[in-house]
Length: 77
Image 1 (spheres, rainbow, N blue to C red):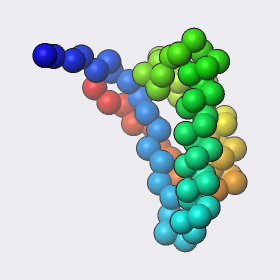
Image 2: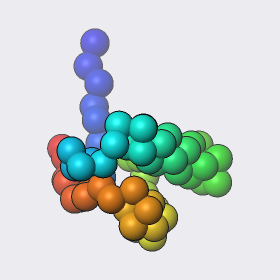
Image 3: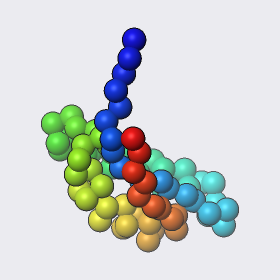
Image 4: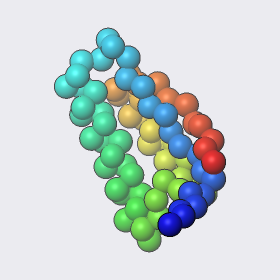
């Protein structure tokens, strides 16, 4: 069986060691909720949607300010 993964971009999130595990877990929960909300608002589209990064980046930046993580956008094939 073959599966073709579409070319896509994704957020690479990194919580620094200075952020407590509790706060990092809370941040991950909110990031995961962001993905779930995106699916609901965009008829089930996932992180593979072409505009996922642009649609979610403002919310990711707001969470970044609150939780202190860093992120990059990486293109995957």
